[in-house]
Image (cartoon, rainbow, N blue to C red; front, side, top):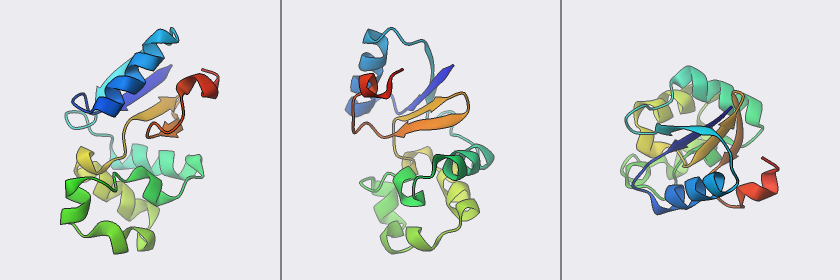
Length: 117
């Protein structure tokens, strides 16, 4: 099963969700602010994704800038990063596409059709 973790007001999330729907994919939607992933979930996703920690952060977000994370993110451990991300859903890069408990894609850089869903 696919989980689509989004911020519903985000135009990129709406575009990505529309593509999933047009591909006929069944998925559960999760509002990243109302139902923020837990630190444990985020730790697992980060560890199993082989992506750099920074790719899980919404680096263009206001909260990221307010906390001055630009120079700090690269020094965070997986646990520290996951705790920080879980503290505020707006810090998480979105949308997050998770399949069977593993991150398929963070953000919406390439079409989901290319992922073979």
